[in-house]
Image (cartoon, rainbow, N blue to C red; front, side):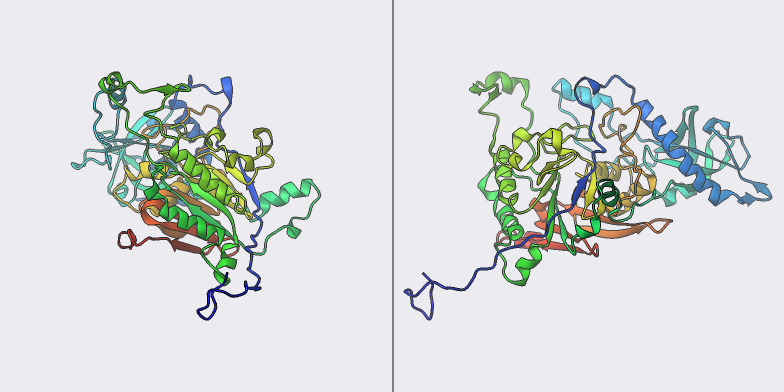
Length: 500
């Protein structure tokens, strides 16, 4: 019954209720970070080969930039010359050399910490920064021939981390160190045009991509849902779901919600698991085991709630989900997709594994990092671990500065495998940036921020720092036509003061 003029009894309204019409998503993922399957995946190779491989792959680009910058550079009539190896520099000669940076920092974690954890010894707390307060840290430049300690006031004006490849210009001092007066990076690689990859694939199938391009649309990005399974953490999530489905809005606002073509969840979907119990606690605990796990220790509520949330959205909104640091996936980078067994309701919207690479379904569980094309734009994103680890090397806490530096280094995880666990790649390093993205996002960051980074050849990259939704209540929207960024805030009376 409808209420009209204070009367409870009246005829039902004949006004037609508007329905939400959603724009189609044009989604073409890449599988750059997929690891080999079965027996083809092994860990017998040495991690040192990764740094030599990165140096070999980035050295031509860095040498080209250095040659362009220092071709006519000279001091007191002495012209700078290039040397092939770091051990070929000579005292008093002006030269430049290409190598991989290695940071000698006393506060970096070491293997003894891992051994302590394996032997159930209390490990030291995680450090927020690896920088030594006394300034005892040293910077090395290394290649296949050896290491060279680099110094100079110029290094204090910029930040480098272990794993980035640079060209250093300077001269060797009497103490054997190399005093640097300038450096060069590989900088941003070539950026593909919008729809370039889609047009190439559709040209092979004799279709016209222009007939299928959407006029407008929005990409939604969220991270850090941190679902714990308790009823108290579902209020913000319910508001998020109602907004994405258009149920909490009407009129113009509902039509704007219909422009969202895809939701990307950038890691941190589940809250941190319970701490590992000690041996004494395990011995004293006599929980009932069911189907091979301890029912008193295992809680399926978080994954059930996540699956319910995804299955509620999926009939209308396609979803791409990346794993994060707290999600049930492998710890080493690149993290592989969350297993379909975690999503008994949502996995029905995903294509079988044999078809998902060529024709991904509405639900796509992907790797971390991940890259792909959404509405024609090349997206590159992570769950945030790579950015968080680099921040420990530098004094600057600006997330976008670090993200831009990683793009110019052409490596999204330079500190792996030194202080960030990763797979020991041998023949190719997918962590190197071969194509410049249009949008680069990092999830689970302290706060929201955005910026456009520009490259030497006119490249423009939208950098997005996506905060944890459980703490900030923020959803990031990117207009697919203009790349304009919006940030939607969700809050409840209980946490409204905390979110402001």
